[in-house]
Length: 295
Ligand SMILES: [Zn+2]
Ligand SMILES: [Zn+2]
Image (tube, rainbow, N blue to C red; front, side, top):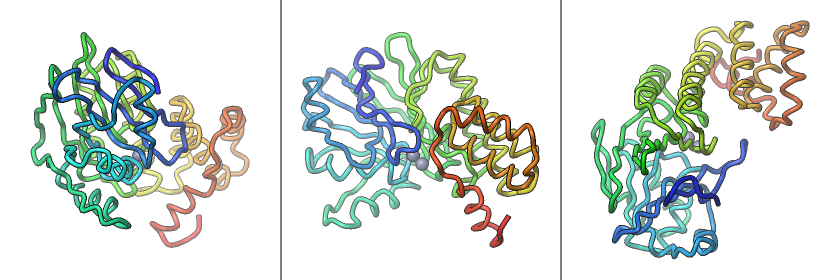
């Protein structure tokens, strides 16, 4: 747990490769009490909130960036703590979320507030929040923008760092959504897995990098799986963005296609110093799923 700004906290930080999203908390200091952004896959809300003197029963609102289980499983605990809590998500992801939560338990969980428009507005005490529908990573992806003092803060879910691949997403929508976010000119980006990115120059660089990564993934998986330069670019940009596991996978895959590639060997050495997670066969696995053959 750490404080980002006055009234804004990272309740649970995410380490790369961990199967849970980052959880953010806004204390509105008003009758609207506490607002969560995403819930992770399971979390001791009581214990962690007690550390900052807050009561989980006072979490009145939960904004969900999208329906993937790593962002929503924690809803199970939340409705037990406060059965009248309001949950906000886009209508296109709402069924997916409800089925995750209701799967094993008889909770009868329902998203209470559905987003259906391109943009919507919310107000919690003194905080106005603009909600944007940003499909691409999932069809019901949402981003939430608010101002805290002089800072523009954006919660973007996985549209940036968490899920760059076009697998399971939509390349064109993804690109459109990222371009939209880049125009918001925010000071602080609260990412679904990469935690907090700031100041605004770093946010711009990061979003631009994600647009490039998305293109490399699109070429690698959808257009030309044996394009060596594309895999090298993917590895290099991932490395520069400190997404070491993706860089590692891309480099290894490139070396499988071209064992003598000196540039890839040298980059792999640099990547290994950062102790990336070993998802080694991931790219091959995805390609096999798509094309039904080994590469
Ligand atoms: Zn995620
Ligand atoms: Zn996701």
